Length: 126
Length: 240
Image 1 (tube, each protein chain N blue to C red):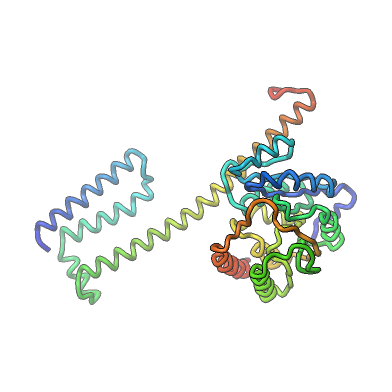
Image 2: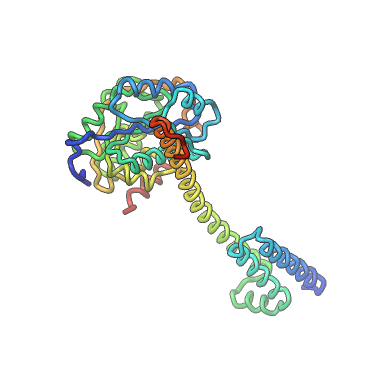
């Protein structure tokens, strides 16, 4: 890996990390979700600055090319993240459904009370 | 499961749940049918955020409506009705389509069957006497497949597992208020009751061909439907 590439990658990763940190600061990104991305950025940065680690890992795992390892782990990470997101979406769908039902049931009860009140000759303020 | 106490001394409180999504053309006739042919039943229309005039038609006629602010689909809508029935102390709740497919004249017979048989659920089945609208051939084939699958898993023959005309006792109302499938809920939720030891039976009913609205199951969705419901039934079978 040439020094030039190393510097470009490091700069990009640092920019991305700053971007994520800023979003957390502005509270547009929940820190719980930011953590996994910050971790990925950190790992890429370390591997970029110390190429020896990657060469060692590649050798250890018996992988031919470092780039193959990056693809493999990148793919695994993406799958994991996607799966955790579908789990979260499922839970939120259930929560949204409950909330929607509660609102509808509350509204029905209010209407019912108003109607009963009106029938008994009281106004809503009673 | 068994009934807690005999509700015979006091009035049995019965509710018709009418899920309605874009049923402006059929909802009025549906409610009038219930008012006329099942006067012992209370009813509630669950308007699932219709984009047509369903809500306006109900308001104009002074119908009892629960209005969902967001579209939840058939499962979430029906479940809202069960939650309402549960909280308001109903002994019996029955689902009844808002598109004119179902006939209210069978509701009393269903309730009699539920109470006299000490059952947890009674399904209105098109396929016992095979009278009235029988659905299209390919759908009947799908329904037979589900009948066979449910029989294999629970040992009980449900001739019309996709029927949307189903009456539940108090315990099932409570279960459904807590847990109910989101889409294509009928076969799966019957299996859930059977697996919990619930007593389910059917009575013959006639249904009408849909006059208003369109089926929620388009041909393109039917493959998804078969796979999803099969999987859901298998999962319901191992859920405890």
